[in-house]
Image (cartoon, rainbow over all chains, first blue to last red; front, side, top):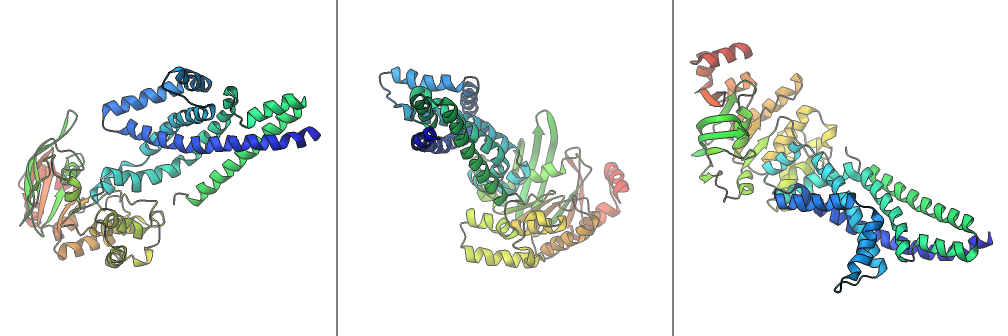
Length: 214
Length: 242
């Protein structure tokens, strides 16, 4: 019990870092996903290819390799200098962005063509159609899958401990060796992740119910 | 005044030539009904009139503007050409009122108060004022289609296109929608109506076009076309549907 009480403040510091990284990376990731999805669906072939290559590259490689490439690989170039937290955020954002883009693309394509035809026949241009008609409907449909990917990305942030980011997992590792009580520290670590993810799912459920498609 | 002029219109989907050669003219306040067997190209013809389908060949003029010219702003033209679809295509995430005011607000940048006032007037016209706050999912088919008509009218179009507006409706709902369309015709709206409602075509049409195989096979006032069809294919079609 003592170990836990002693370790807990450190774990909370780590949790703050995890949530900070997650919050920034998920917003960035969503924006990347949206842009890549629109590239993928754009009438220009070159944009389709860029989007496809990006998604395939991310899907076809392990997260940890992407992390090492960005942190060690890019940093070895003379003109780039990223600290480990920034490199971590960038990696999580890019990784989530690739998966988000596929979710968003499928969501957009699931909206009946008649919706776009009705909007365009009223004189809305393609941007207005996307913004007011297609995307709002698509997002409602995508929400469960988006939540799922957000949870995966939150868990992926624990891998940032490998490059020394002082996140929840990293603090856990430090406390486990400092207290010689790996069992209890990692148990608590797991419980904290579980609670955060549970709260995240509850929030998603609430949003889903609030915006349920009539 | 000529509202629509179609010159040698052609439309292909890949290798499939749906519209082979169609020319016609629609004058102001005319009600043109388009009939024909399914797959004849009549819906495609209608959808070419606001370039919802990219036109393969020929020209379509809306008033003075050639809409096949890629340089024109098609969104500008579409504001003057309302369209009503077989499947209604209401926006399910927006209330009836929001459906109607969306385009006037976003496209014409209208004043919200004025736009809403107009929307309520249009809802009165289609008999659905009390449904303003309802969502499309809560309406019957006939109600949805009347909202769709109000939505198109909210842009003050000069021309209304109807693509089989009653084909997806239960029989008892058809009358309400046709009544709204009749009223619109009587008020002098220029209308092109693709329909299977021969009764409506006979009563309200100034002219009826019979389209088959990608051509206008026969074109006449309803009394003549229904009473005294000249072409074999028209006779065969009418004998099946009348």
